[in-house]
Image 1: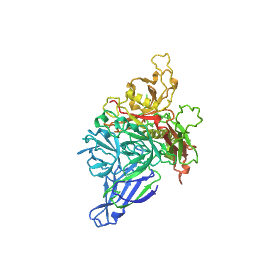
Image 2 (image 1 turned 60 degrees about the vertical axis):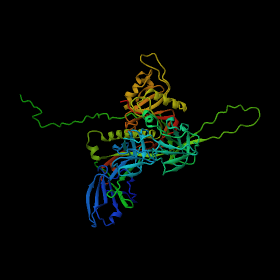
Image 3 (image 1 turned 90 degrees about the vertical axis):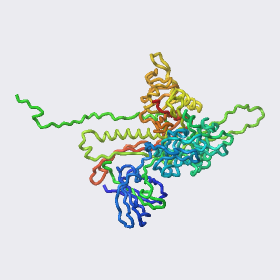
Image 4 (image 1 turned 180 degrees about the horizontal axis):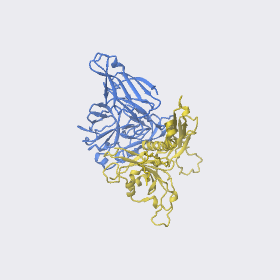
Length: 321
Length: 316
């Protein structure tokens, strides 16, 4: 059966990997880098990329524009190409060991992993952080990615007793898929109003109600089981402001590494409901099928400011995969 | 004497299909057992809003004889919202499959789709509980991880927390009887967990196997036993988080639920549709049939204080 175009579009690259949500039945995906196609190249540069269902994660057929000639050369790339992602999957990425300074005592904390391949906004799980076991088993949204390290933008580890001297990191696909979700607290102000920082992008909106679960191991025991209404949100800082006067509360602080190793329940929040005028806290399954486009000069998502055109196609039936 | 043997004759047809198909592994679907069932009315929008009023303060001061009214109390409430989502999958069968196969492929496709539908519902509920329930880490064990393996003090902590939040138990007690090896079972919260916990579960102090219940009439098929005021339902698709513990081991989520802690909301008139389209609807040559299901559902915790995710690792 002939292929049918099911979706197409364009975007301007921000230099990072790019996700495009699609119907689940697409079998073919193509990308053209308009900016680089219109540019006289001094070295070979990927301008057109193709993918068919059944290819391994990260693969793509890449057509490179060679020098000043408009002819295209074909090659197969095995990393940094296309990855079809089912966000309902619970399968984590491969383990990568931390190295060098591992996890710093800093605000924000920086994790060193050689050639990690992560992008801004990725969610990772950290464990085995010897010396800094307060964060072992936590998921974090990462930011400020460099080739061999990334920043835990919402974690101030400067007050921890020691750096981590080891550790492992795995990418978390989209786990959990439901929103709003339970989320771990990395900071909470003893102030009026209380401002709470989370380890993972919270996605909350004004009007949602949440319950705080804070054990004595995290200092601010007065906040335990309180229900607060979100009165303001900051996506930049990943915080919410609650209608709770915490000015008389004990300061929030992570337990020391040894206490965490002996067993604690991490401070967290859970969604409770909504104030009467909003549906912001309605439970929803947010899983999607997305095509993840790798970034960079030879990736389908291109470099910063590149204009990218894409199309997804499907055939009526897939005979074999 | 000339005996006709199989080597004399042309080779016989060597395949015969046993028409009794083999059993297909099917997990116990435990996660909707304690759930309330609610319906989203037809033409009622995309979100169902459930409302719970907050308790009023008690009035323990005498009114006296002054004739002066005490201050009135204001009613307050919290809204619990859920957005309906639609799901479905299908199988496409070329007509030659159903025409020529000796096994009843279409019937089997229908059976497999039925199981897929119910398992999808179960996993959606499981995933919602894992994503949104508050949690308590097991800390009483000795395996050196965080959380530790399951021990009695952790079960007691969860029971205390639920009871302190006025969560009602789901099942009534099973009265003791004069039968060898049996023990009474307390009124209980239901726990939904993974079958991988069987060894650790049986080592918890006070564990009573379901075979030791005095009365087997009230035993559920996926039930493994009870500990104190909890009864444990186990499934191979019980919830777990890989590489999530302090040491990077798998964490098992044990959802301890009280009565009316969560619900599954179905779209009225659309809770499950089985759809068969014979080849005549397929195209010019009517080559393919399709069979599938679709349904609309959203699970939601209705009182976050009445369900707790007790997280543990394994002892070995």
